[in-house]
Image (tube, rainbow, N blue to C red):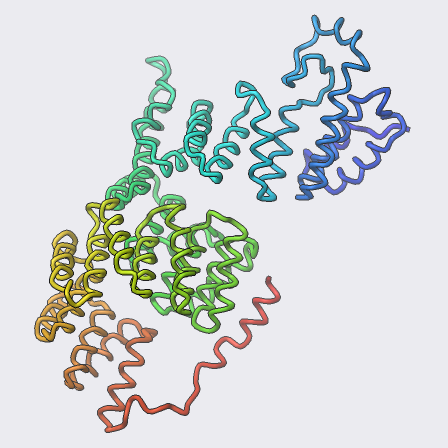
Length: 561
C-alpha cells in the first residue's frame, strides 16, 4: 500500500513537521519506492523527509537525507536515458545542472538546504562549498543572502559585497543587505544606485515609489553614517525618519544603540524604554539596555529586564550578555561564562566581546581583555572597542600601543569629542604628557561643550597638578547646566581630598538624591561620615552586607534556563 506523498507536503505546509517526519520514514522505506526501478521517486521522498528534519532543526540527519537524494537524482539518466531524450522536447528543462534529470528534485535547492544546515552548525566552509557549486545565474535571493553572510564571516569582503549587491538588484527591500553593505564600507551613492528606476509617469504607483525611495535613501544614508562613525549625522537622519514613522521600533532601537555607544545614556535609556513600551517582548539590543541600567546602578530595572528576557527566549545571545551584566558585581566568573556563551551562540555578537573585555579588565586579566576588545574592533571599529583597547593597554603599561589605538580612533572619528578625549587619556597617564592631555580635553569640550566625560577628566587632571580651585570652578560651572550625579561625586572627592568635609558631604548627598544607587557616592558618603566622627575610614568593617541579594533569583534563573 502506497504512502501518500502529497500528505507530507500538506503536513509541512501546516507546520506539522513531526508528523511529516513520521510519515516520511514510511515513505522512504516503502517497497513501491524501489531505488533501482524509480531512483527519482526515491530522491523526491528523501528530500521531503529532509525538509521535515530541517524544520525540527535536526541538521545532521537532514543533510544525510539531502545528500542521499542527490546521489539518487544523479543516477536517473542511466536508468531512463531513452525516455528522457524523447521527453526533453516537450517538458520544461529542470533548473538542476543535470539536463537529463526528469525528477521533480531541484538540485540547486537541495544544495542550498545542505548549505543552510552547515551554516546552522557554524560550518561556514562546508556551507560555502555547497553554495559555490550552484551556478551564479541559478542563485536565488536567499542563496545570495546566505552567501554574503558566509563570505563576510570568512572575511572575504569583496565577495560578500558582490552577493549583497545581487540581493538588492533582485529586491531593494532586503534590509539585511543594506545594513551589511553599509558596514562593509560601501558608499550611500553606490547602494542607492541599486534602487529600481521610477515607474511610468502619470501612474499613481510612481508617487508611491518616489515616497518609498525617499525614506529608503534616508535609511541608507543613516546606516552609512553610523558605519563610518558619523554618529551625529546618523542620529539626525534617524530622527528625521522617526517623524515620518513614529514609534518605529527598529529606528528607536538603532538610535538607542548609537546613543549608548557615544555616551548619551539618558537619551538611550529613554529610547530603549519607548521601544519596550511598544513591544515588551523585543530582544534586539536589550543587552545594550542592560549595560546602561548597570551603569545607572538601577538594579531593580535590570533584574526585571533579565527576567523578561529569560521568559521571552532564553537561547538568544542578548539574554546571556544581560545575565553577564547582572552577575558582574556578584560573581565575575559566572558573568564571564555568560558572556562567553553569548559569543558561542553568535560569533559576531559585539556586546559579548565588549562585556568579556570589561570583565577581564576588572579581573586584572589584561592580555585577555586586549584580545576581547580586539575581537570587537575587528567586527566593528566603533568607539567602545577603541575605548576598551586603550584602557587595557594603559592598564598593562603599553603606552605606545594605547597611543597608536587612540590616534587610530581619532582618524576614524575626526569629529568625535570622545576620540579626542581618548588621546588625552593616554597623555594624562604620563606626568610628562599632562599638558598635552589638557589640550585634548579642552579641544573635546570645544567640540562638544556638554561632554561631561571630558569635563570630569580635565577636573581630575587639575587635581593631579594641584590645581584644586580650577577643578572646583570647572565642575561647579557644569553643575549649573547639568544636574548629574557623577559631577557631584567628583566635586565631593575634590573637597574630601582637601579636607573640606562639609562640602564633600553635601555633594555626596546631592549625588544620591539624583541616583540613590550610585555606588561611588555611597562609599564616599560613608567614608566622609566616618572622618567627621573621627573614625579611621580605612579600618576594616565587620559588617558584611549585601551578601544575600536576590536570594531567589538564582533559583528562578536556573529554572528558566
